[in-house]
Length: 241
Ligand code: GLP
Image 1 (cartoon, helix red, strand yellow):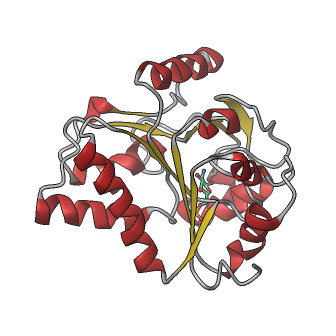
Image 2: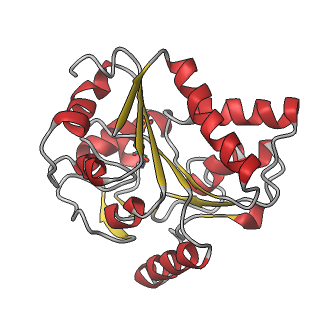
Image 3: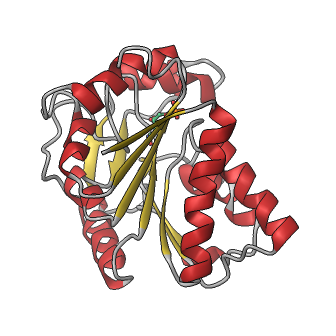
């Protein structure tokens, strides 16, 4: 595991550089997309590179990590809409080339299985962007998730719903109770994992991720087994290393 400690803006540039290098080498690359505040500066940097130096997503595929269950199709916090606004619509990325698990499907288990097949049919994810929850979750794999898990329905913990209430007018009651999420086993199949974490509130999760024993209690620790994992953290998030 490679750990880089730098100011947040530099971390975003490093992640964007890795994505740009991949897209220049392989325009039809498969990108794994994360939501949350951690990757937002990366998306800003990619949009800038699209405008200023013609970085193109026209042939790329994108697969999102996770999605809330039951949010209306036009809800701004539906992750599909968040990704559209944060990156896809700011660059030349055809909408049908970016997919997420379908949190509005009538058969959620079937939607999860279909999503796994779609990722496999695309040849797997080349580079997966990741954030980390304060409780050590990646995507929505909450503590206790099987390290071998696949895309499935999960119940969100109270901690995660409280953390994410800031996106729902500060009202935890508006945060959905369930989600669909790629499993830890699914995420581990991506060829390069790039995790970003900033701020002191992430310091314990980062400490466990890098130095803790591999355990389902801190789901991100499974990344210690990945042959190509890059952890990009600022001084505050690295303060317990
Ligand atoms: C959310 C998302 C994760 C994200 C994490 C951290 O619940 N499902 O994919 O990495 O929490 O979010 P943030 O980057 O906003 O701190």
